[in-house]
Amino acid sequence: MPARDLYHDVVVQALIVDGWTITDHPLYLTYGGRDLYVDLGAERDAIAAQKDSQKIAVEIKSFLSLSPIRDLHEAVGKYDVY
Image 1 (cartoon, helix red, strand yellow):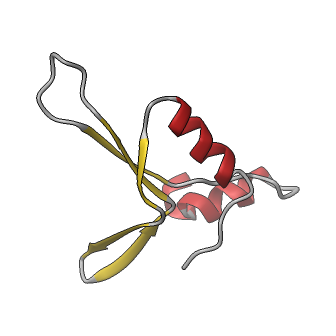
Image 2: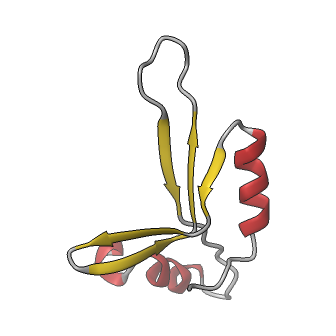
Image 3: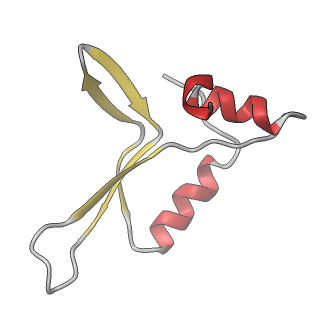
């Protein structure tokens, strides 16, 4: 299981205050034969005019090193940055 980010608990509390229900902590996904771990899975009930509930997957990252570019590369990968 991946380590929790520095801001993990703050993000959880902010989602709860905003009306989200944390459903998975972490959220396990399988894609292309690989197991993926996302920090949180959350959902909230739909507004009365909508039919389905909203669901989100939240990946929490902080950029605390001396190089924000290196943090960005580690978070999304060098290929996606270029």
